[in-house]
Amino acid sequence: MSRRIRGLLITLICAAAGAGIAWWVSTPEVPAEVEVTERARAAAAGLADSHVYVDPSSEGVFTEQQLARLDAAAAASDPQVFLVVWPDSWEAGYAYSADVLKQIGELTGQPGLYLEFAPGADLAHTDVGITGERFHILGDYDGESTGAQETTQLLQEIENNDGRQYELGEDTSSNYFGGTAGTIAAGLLIGAFDGAVLGLLILGGWSAARRRRAR
Image (cartoon, rainbow, N blue to C red):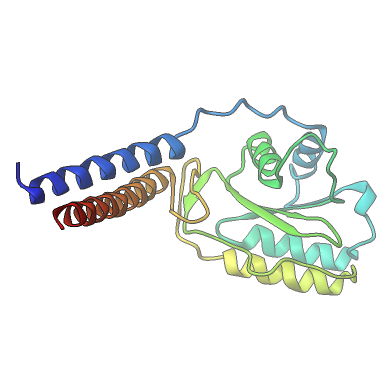
């Protein structure tokens, strides 16, 4: 067997191994379903007749006029928007904001963009019941709660959402690769590339060792 063929085989084997590892990493077991929290139930009930829910502990952050503007903009947006306003909490029964937002969306049965705003903390968002263009909030809120400032930023985010191309259907998109299939494909490509590079390095080391022995 010639040196070139051996080198090609080593490269292919390493590439296949890298792709296999990437497949295993990018397709983990389905995690256990997160228990529906009381927060989610309260928010879903509040969103039954409105597009904005304000937890009793966060009342006073917005005026009635500001809430009316947010509600009107959220209802008119396409895809529609549902806004939840409540204090940030690490003891609310869920690990990530996206988890509770998905719970709320499943309880309401209304597809769209769900936003979480915690006064003085970050904005969070997730698509529920739709598959659409990737949406990302650029720059989280960080500062003193003034009402007017938050209203302006939230109205801007709602406007950015309006007009996105979407279809009804459960969203499974990742933040970077455009969906589960995209994530797997990207993982395979990265794994194959890493394997090929590793194969070339091994081939180079093997060739160098042979040259040293020949001397």
